[in-house]
Each structure stands twice: as C-alpha cells, then as structure tokens.
Image (cartoon, rainbow, N blue to C red):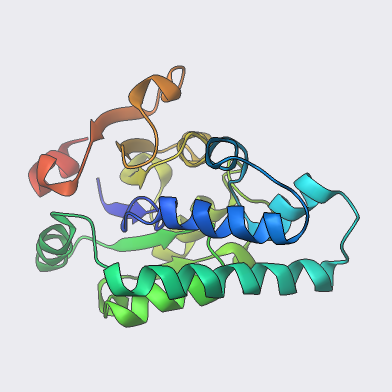
Length: 216
C-alpha cells in the first residue's frame, strides 16, 4: 500500500449514534416519526440526498440545505464535549506520517462537520487530500469521492487501503477498486457479506499495525 484513506464519521470518530439521534429529532420536527433503528437503517449518505429520498420534492434545494445545517448544528452541540479519535488512531496517524505514507479523507459529511472535527482535533497536517459531500455529485455507495481523493493523492486504487464503517461506504471503496478495513462501530460483520474487498474487521485501531496495513 502506498496510501491510506479514511472515512470520517463512524471510522475516525465514534459519532454515528449522535448523528442518528440528531436526525431522529430533526425528522420529528418535520413531521416524520422514525424509531432509532429505522434511522440507523435508512438514514445514511449525503444530507441533501437523504432528505430527497425521504421527502421527495416536498422541500426545495435551498430548504434542504437549511434543514441539513440545522441538523448538523444540533449534532455538533451534542457531540462536542465527547469529541475524540477512536482508540489507537492518534498513534496510527503519527506512525503513518513518520513513515511518510500519504493519507486522505473521503467523507459523506458536509464541510461544516469535516471542519468541525479537523479543527477541534488539529488534524489537517496529517492529510494530503480531504473531500466532503460538496466535492461530489454522487454520494456513497458511488465511488466518486474515493476516486477524487486518490486522484489528488496521485495513487492508484490497487495501491490504496480504505478504512470504512458502513455497508454503503465499503461498497463505495469496492467500486473504486480498493481493499477495505471495516471499523465495527455501527455495523456488524454479517452486514457486509458479499463484499470481496474487505480484508479485516476491527473494533478500534489498536487491532491493526502500520506494517500490517502496508502489507495488504
């Protein structure tokens, strides 16, 4: 492997439960009552696409952006006091940088949430490329975001390992032609059956080493 790409939500930070709770509250405000389990199963991807999928053309594009921003501000308010990298990841970042291994981020999150994490945790210096929801036309499982990150990092798919946490994200990585390591913060291994690009499941980053990563 010549480069490593990380998804952000659920992969670098264990925040998906907070996202689901914030979505559940916002959707209820909009008149759509969903259980937490329903949100967990159905609400994923780019916010604008989520709202279009759930509400059709009920809201204009401008209104969808406004709803998205309101939801994200609620998420940040709840999550900020507990914001931290998943166990083992600070050490992994440090070691990858020490070995001059290029790193990137391909996140379905809106830019305000990517900036929130990157600024609060002082992470920008680790990464050669960072892409978010507004950098792509198609959200995951489409491979566009990972292809764009690899293009900016100037590495080929066969030279890149991606860390993900969701079936849609793992499928995006597979379609991009990359091997995938799954972080099981939000989904169980059985939910990823049929994806031939997955090389390992981990619960946190203490379960993988730099030498192991570079050998995939």
